[in-house]
Image (cartoon, rainbow, N blue to C red; front, top):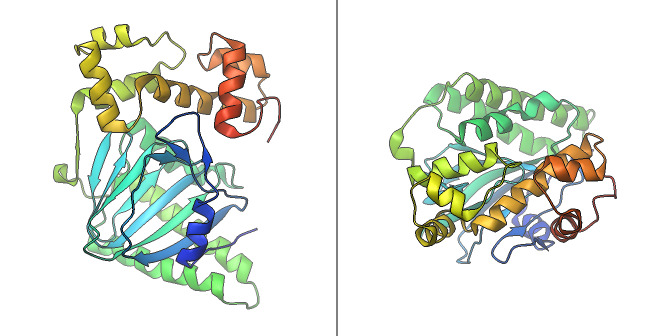
Length: 294
């Protein structure tokens, strides 16, 4: 039930199973069949990273290097032992200085794990439009104790190893949730940068997915010229406005379907006016028709 890919090769193998989404510049990458997977990677390989998303939650624990991470219009400037919460469906990409080795832990987490409350931090990150947890030295020590032990639990074949992995994973996520929900993290305005108008636009779109969201109405509401809005949005997110809206509506529909909603109802309640267009876009993004339950 619980497995790990400690080695970089395993992580890359999973990433290469990427399925193209319905958008040109974004990909759905990685597949997760277990409740969670852990990766510990240190590399220094120059490569191009593109905006992408996952159908599961992800936590990045930054250890060393020089890296910024773009998540939903914000650019986070990382320091050692920073924790990033990347929610399912969040558009993101790293920006890496390849002159230094980049080391990190990566945890992939299913959205439907047994104890669903452990994923509360991801919903709260969406609500706050903020994904960074910067720890003081005391809280860092807790994380430094748990993660190596969790990593070892995957390698060792001893009595109760699966129970120990589950316990350590649960302990780690309980700590992360407590720190994030109670705002025990360090607040540093220099830890991220963003365009405030694009940030407001993203928040508005995600709160009004069922509304009519035309480029004309959005440019008027946020005091952009239409063409400046389209250019700036693509620059900050990697998406066109239309592609971003469709993507978020599809994830909303998928969530409704997972809760048992009929297909037509899920389509209408996620902002789609054209049922045929919804089915076509859904199949293109997720690789299966919405009638196929998961």
